[in-house]
Image (cartoon, rainbow, N blue to C red):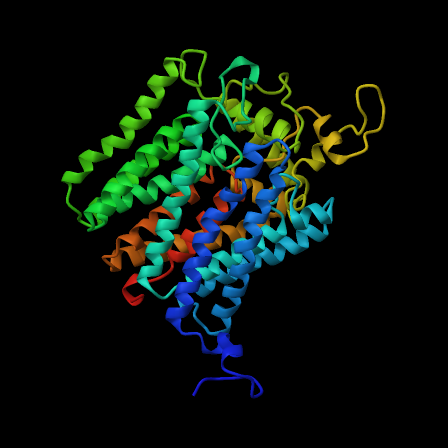
Length: 472
């Protein structure tokens, strides 16, 4: 007999009566929405100047609310497996300490909702936690395949939009920084570096699926998709793109060796590499790069293009303090300054998405007039930055060292269990999700969380906890 609460109807007690199969179908829908929704909502601010990037946050909120409901169902119905409990509790602890950090922050409103044009405050962290728990509660192997498909589809949507930007020069906000390059592709990820992060996950998923999947049609699809990913990644002019391509190829080879897959298809891994090489050649011939060469422009992109011009979240760079053309100098400067900020407030940090606030040294313009809005104040402070491109340092700086410890606990647990699941099962999805999670954890060393990348990463991380041999 179906369960019910206080003699209500069965249909009104769907949570109590939901089967594992029904839950997995709903969870797969929620995860696919999480992978795609932010990108789709970013179309409007990309194609028209009238729309702000704050609209993109709606694309996180919709699947986020869905996954809050699904996560609660998973907890009530005990769909979360025992081996996933530690990682889920660690994520919950990270979210809980985020509340403490928010209450001790410079601006509670920003701490909760996130900085305008960024949207990654405490509410976003709660959404990530619920996306993670929802993915970890999947009980069907078919639903795991849907998660992998969602990751690859997110890459396709972003790379195709990026290719439109590359060949038309339209719908792109990253133009002509100091005449270093004509423009950089950002796809639907808001920043070229964020695009490279998203496409790295998609490329890993596509290449690992290509070397392991038994379906010839799916393998061909994944190989073709990977070529579009690498082509678009090159046009981000970022260190992340080169690191992502190398990482994806290494992981694909490792997956083939570990799972003892046929080695002949590995020769076709040269196809996405060739696509990237073609993009470099086009740069030398003036396509999107009027300097007639190919160089990395991380400094101009992350500082002038993204933080200063697009998001109004920081001042422009200070040429006296950092060589913006030197990629190593840019990243080392950001890391060094962030470590100093961590030392000032190691327990609760600056507050979610408030890294720029302790750096502000003036609230007036050059004429001495007091500035009205915080966006004006921030932009009037050259040398400040709101993102450090190392998520581990960023977490410690904004939400305190306890949050960093919790984050490391989540990742270590997930990677360890994901590796064991991959070794136990023959499912290509299990191997794919493990390598995507491992790749995401590694690129956090030179990248930072953002609302396009993070839902995809945490969905993969949660799903990697699922034992595919039990998910029939």
